Length: 94
Image 1 (tube, rainbow, N blue to C red):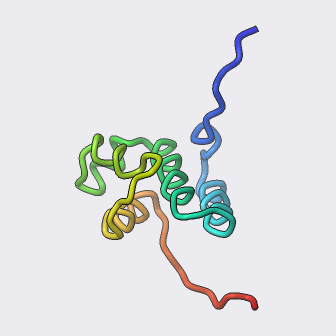
Image 2: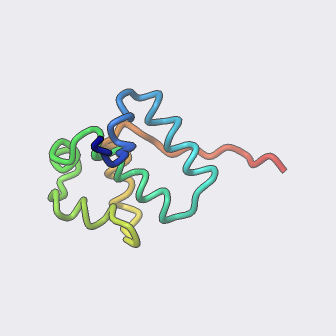
């Protein structure tokens, strides 16, 4: 029996699933987790498409969204816009 590697990007096939995934990572993860999650979403949509929409090269996208990367905020905003996302702030429940 052959075992295949689990790829979350294979399951991010609609906007609702993408939003739920990213919101969960934002709520429960750290900075690195969020960057990696955005990378998974970009892969699910297609790095070539994201590169075209952001004006960044594919290698630059892979580097910016890799484990341990520290991309600039401007880069993250471009990618979020390209994947159809936006940032909203809501009061924290304290």
